[in-house]
Image (cartoon, rainbow, N blue to C red; front, side, top):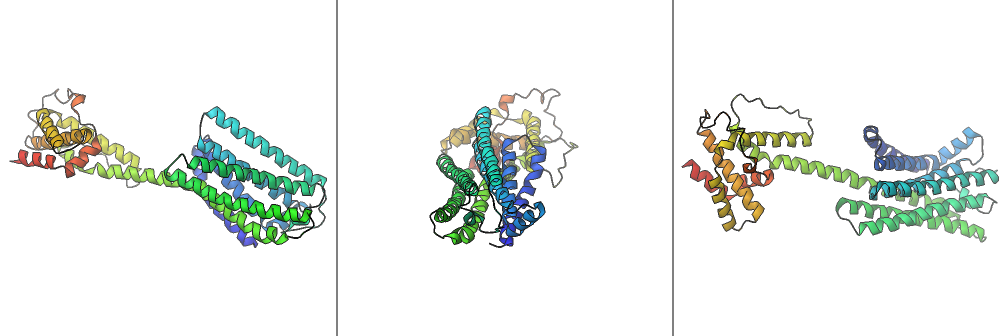
Length: 389
């Protein structure tokens, strides 16, 4: 892999991080969000500092030969810990237990990072190696131990992640399961990366040469594994948010028939709230529901309970279930009340206190089902035709 091959994944992580930072600024106490930001930051840092041009630059700026090696190893170790911590926070559970398990992983991998630094300080790496540090120094005292330690820490994290994600994926559905399976796929590449690296290092210990596996095969596997795994963490969060947003807009549209039906009941001169085009879908739904309930309040004196009971019996006779029959009955009552109100434009039958004494038990409940019935129910259409005669 050339420098560009490392910088492209780093840039992808940076872009993903840029989209997450505003949310972190507004909700920085959220442990799950902090974990996602930490993972994206460390993943981008690993690719950036593992690029051969960056390795050479860091070595030159610090004046310490091969100091980039422990830096990259520490970043990989921290990234492994961040994946485990993110998984703990993502899965949830009692807050105290979640914090305790997260602290254990952070503490354990922090000790590994300290050990990597100490082993590098004790060892000697006089020859700069930009691509094959692992195999070149595999037999060097202390340095070989440092290489083995970082590979072991990464391998343990990869195995734990595969097991946790696989088990959890069997218990859930939807976008969460998709994300977990993507993470498992990414970590299979990480396990293959570990296999190639460990095979190359062990071959050096045994006097053989499999350096090409470490130098040319392992880096692309690491890049693919990190990108796929990061995608697995992000996809459920993004897709679930998009799905929720779509459902909110669907609710807004489904309420349209009922909202339009009751608009005629509003007294003339009633001010209407104008929503800006950029208003959130949730706010639009709330406003539409509020308009509908206001309409029910004005229609209350015209509600005919006997007509509702008759519509309910007709809907049941037509094979509707209990909830649908109630919604059809409410829709028929609303449709009839709207026409009764239209026939009384001056509101003569509305007493001064009659609106405020509307019994809440008589107010229609399931707005979405009522709206659907207004548009599709034959019973409601029959009531409309009967009232119009």
